[in-house]
Length: 158
Picture 1 (tube, one colour):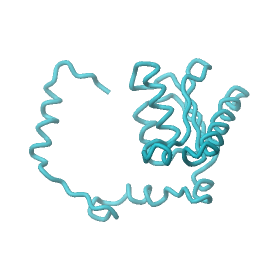
Picture 2: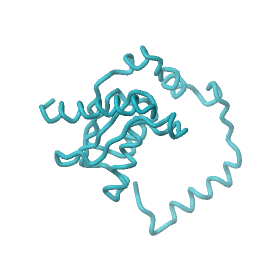
Picture 3: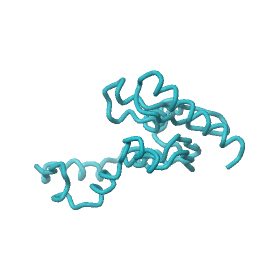
């Protein structure tokens, strides 16, 4: 980790405190950097926006993609104040940054009651064994949209 990486991580940690002190949500912050410059920032806004997906990383990814006019962050680096939760991890993989730095670990978050272990455990289970009931309905009709996608000539791949 370089001095510049430490500078960007300190900003992510600063954002975690800003969001927490503004009562926006939990103590989590993230910045996205491209070519050595911060292009996007975010802090957790779950409780202030009544949006369970408004985690710092997701907020920062949405802002960066809007700013860059793309849905992928190929040449970007994400700095986040904590190891990403399962949802943010998925968003990060979809956004495809080249690297992620994080400060706190999931055990640190669990120690202050932000414990995602249940979600990690649920992902590994078969659908029938999960705590929330999942039921497939109208699969035959739903698959038609997938078939149409494979035939679509002007689709944008991702």
